[in-house]
Amino acid sequence: MTANRRTDHGALPRPPAPSPHGRTTSPYGPERSVDRGSSPPLRTEPPLRTEPPLRTEPPFRTGRARAVLRAVAIASCVPYITLKAAWAAGSRAGIPEGSPLLDGGTPLAVGNAATVLMDGAVVALALLLTRPWGRRVPAWLLVLPMWVASGLLLPIMTAYPLQLAVRLLGGDGGRPAGGGAEPFLEPWVFGVVYGGFILQGLTLGALFTLYAGERWGALWRGRLRDLPESPTAPALRATAVAAAVFAQIPLAAHLLWAAGSTAGLDAGTAAARTSDFHVLEAVNAVFAVCAVTGVLLLAFRRGGRLPSRVPLALAWAGSAQTACWGGWLTLAVLAGAGDATDRTPQATVVIYAVQMLAGALVVTLGAHFFAERSAALASSSVPPRRAVEAPRAPREPGAMRTVRALFGKRARLRWLHLIMGGALLMPYFLVGTVLVGLAGGGQQLFSSVPAQLGAFGLALPMAAVTGLFALVRPLCVAAARALCGVPTAVLKPTG
Image 1 (cartoon, rainbow, N blue to C red):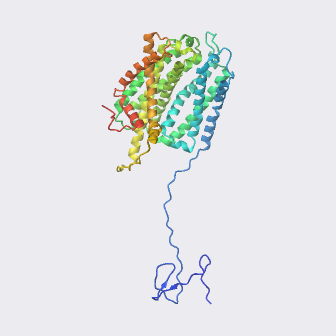
Image 2: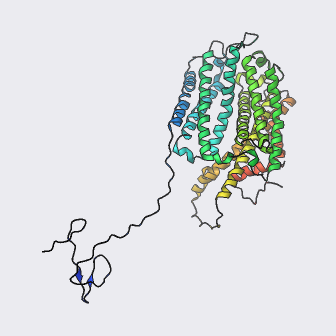
């Protein structure tokens, strides 16, 4: 007998089925003619169809360095939050006898709660910068808190080590030259709190630098001379000049105070000045110079060989410190901490207001720069597409339309536009309070509703007139288009 042929799986092959027309139907293919005495053809496997591999993004990896930076940033928040929680619970740890904090009352409790929330935001930023979901966060939701954090942490990161160095060289440190002033906090509290702030600034700065370089690094590559000319260059240059002019007022004030002048200071601050005060004012003046230098380099493209990231870093640090630190001091005045509303001179309020305005102008120009660079890179890399009319969505119920109108994606951007408008109105409001205070003697200005309404009445026309200038209109139009969805045909950058 002839041995049976086996298949690959060990099963006997099925014999071919006879055909009525003398043909044999093969189970492995179409019907074809075969000799009856021959063996069936060998089975051949069909060729495998190969598909191109799917393009997938590389898996997100935090890395050991980022994990360590995140852990340090979160751990550095623990001492400050613990101390604030202890004070809220009634503890007097670190508060000496006679300190004004013992009589802070409700304003101090509100301030402690706000600062605890701000320190909690550091934890959220540390997670956002190191987790995969952080890559999907909108740019403004990350950049704006980082800018504010930079403005509040940079003065401490730079001034506190210098203050310690001056003390080692013989400075009077926290003791006023005249003596007799009540201590504010125990010395160890400043070391613990400011040490934590410095660690927060260093770790968040390193994490944000790595994050921004991976996500937006193409926006600041190259040198200043390689940047394309902007169609709004005249307006941007005029804005830079205006910011530089406004910055001269706080710059001159900080230089005078650092040199020992008491012009514009209240009696209590002038009597309590120490070497720490002079160092802090000198640092404030340095950041004002950084803001002016960065914005002028960006607007006029001076220093062609200079990398574009250098003026951007100067503008970022300078605008954040001038605007946010000025705003922090303004909040202290408006909150009435330590009877500040009764004794803060009007000239100091004006300096804070102009400082905020100068910083706001610088950061607005920087935002416009990044928006133009992003649009230029997007238009050069994406081919034009034909406009296709989208199908109409089914009409939603009235309740859903109301909810979407108040809390939808476009509504959230419009709320942001209102908040930004209120923040930009604040410097004009402070100028209005000065004018109202001069007219009414400055008695109980911030606690009087008619006086505040009068300040708003003066601030709104000033802001409206400012919006008519050519240097401001392109920036306002760009913000309105992006945040409110205004069509191009409705608002034009010029005219």
